[in-house]
Length: 256
Image 1 (spheres, rainbow, N blue to C red):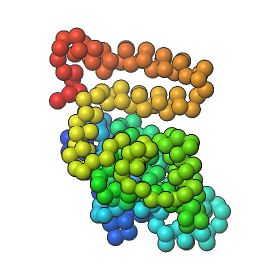
Image 2: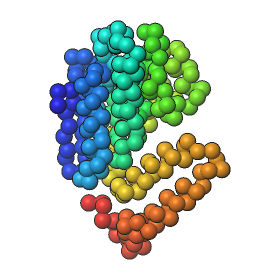
Image 3: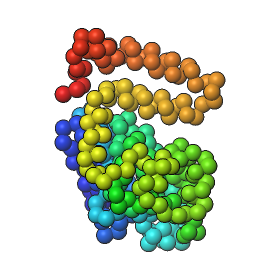
């Protein structure tokens, strides 16, 4: 792999975007390698949590502008194929069955801010800077829009996508783009990982799947998949083990 670095320590996998000279901007290689590895890590039973970060000063500056300029000269079919591949990357992160933590140490603009919306838990360091800046380049925050809407809600998403303004970690926390703003990013990420490892991987995967499904259903259709989910969970291996551990006043088997 040339654009990312993947490592694993125990049950925690770390995916680091590694194009610091380009501020970890997206190009076809980065999109493909991120996509492939999130699919792979989601299927790896030895992995329980994934941490996504960027090397250097930036988390991700969004799409590589040289690449985007070239795509402007491509035909419609090629543009559609490229846009769909980028959209599938965000979906792979969003639907990864393992909890995904985003460690945002620097700039996250355009598609980089879209990555922030795709992870389960986003944590911003003191130098984090955000913006859905596409409109200021004559572009549209299109493929990330489903994830932005789910994270920010309709009203805030409209304001941020239409102005294209940049904003810091405190504002990102205020509007719900990130879940925590901290002066010690590494410590906050480790604390979050520790909390996640206390949960059942099986239950976390089921929770993510259920939330995705229920979100898209009208209210009168939401109860049935929710009822089916808890019925399956009660009868599952982890469900039986978790309840037994609680009643026996011991830690469940998935807690070291």
